[in-house]
Image 1 (cartoon, rainbow over the protein chains, first blue to last red):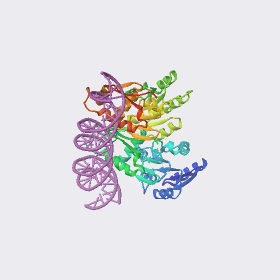
Image 2: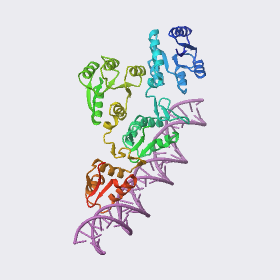
Image 3: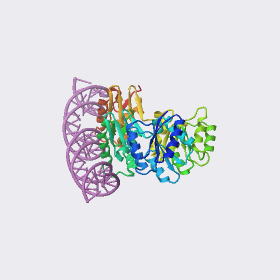
Image 4: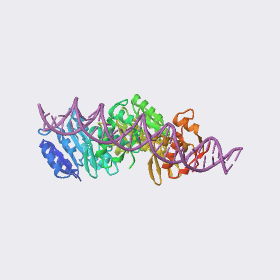
Length: 223
Length: 223
DNA sequence: GCCTCTCATGACGTGTTCGTGACGTGAGGT
DNA sequence: ACCTCACGTCACGAACACGTCATGAGAGGC
């Protein structure tokens, strides 16, 4: 049993989905447009969102982004027509958990919904969150959750921190970082890396977390 | 050193992965499709499987399931494109140990592979830690762990200590040290070595650990 | 068009590293 | 016991790596 928000402008589809979900033992909620959806999602906890991309008024992708901005966004299953492959890819990139092409078989839809409900979020989105001690990095939203609150990181900052965290306990050389993040094959002759690490450290609760190994590179010790 | 099966239909990726693994001290095996992979995995022992999900012929997920049916299935690291979140979730549900999204940084892939091999750090980073009695030297981070806490060593200090520890119980002559660490072929006429050893001893809990053999060189006795 | 955010750049300050030479000290040979 | 030589210790200074700052260009939002 889970609270599932249906976002679609067509009444018939909404009622169809509602009935299917009730039959499967869930509690459906409805929203006819993006604005309503955002309100609902903010005012109460929702376990999963079924989102139609094509809607009048607020665009589906916009709704997607709005939901992703939440602290602990629920999984989002996108409903899309067969045609719009581009939008679909974009939706996935924007953080959609899964998608179902219309017209769909209710059984399949249900299977997917259940899958995303059953799977703990940490597993479903494994790799999205990088946890280290008492702070965790949301690599998609580029937000760092610390005991002192959330801070948003820039793209570069996030990339560097993610790189270090993924290789936690390992020393990452300046060459590796410059190559894999900046795409530089040789030393740029400037101190981009240092500046970026500096900015990162100011945003981290514990600046000593990123250790510098003189003449080699940087390292985040294992928690 | 571990036997790692690479399952991918693209030749270029297979060779790239092979090279990377060999460089890291592993023995790679290749399979171009699911059928071949299943055969290999049944006919011999494999320590880890690198599995591409998207393949013609037998589906990656099917291979995954087949491997899981083995008596003592090896860990499976799945390679997946950024887009296919759904398949990824399914792969995790089906028992994949971890996954890496393509395109990937080889260093990260290696780190994960090593992590999932039963004997992670000792094999993957053989020689990284030099242990002697109650202290251990992390040669990559250049940090010395002592009962009194950690101290960071400079490059030279670390090099000298590592050299002595690797030849524990053996007397290292001044000529050897000066040649192998400083690159000096003849006595520099200064006391670089003594100064360095001196600095080292102050950072070590037990200064008598580095024994001087008058007229010859230095030695660290076996613990 | 204006504003904000990101990010590269180069100047500058600072701490670390490491070689150097002066000097003290202890060991070993005679 | 003395002398000598090898080693240890110290303080100094130069080179270097890193961190910090202010600045300006460019992208993107309103």
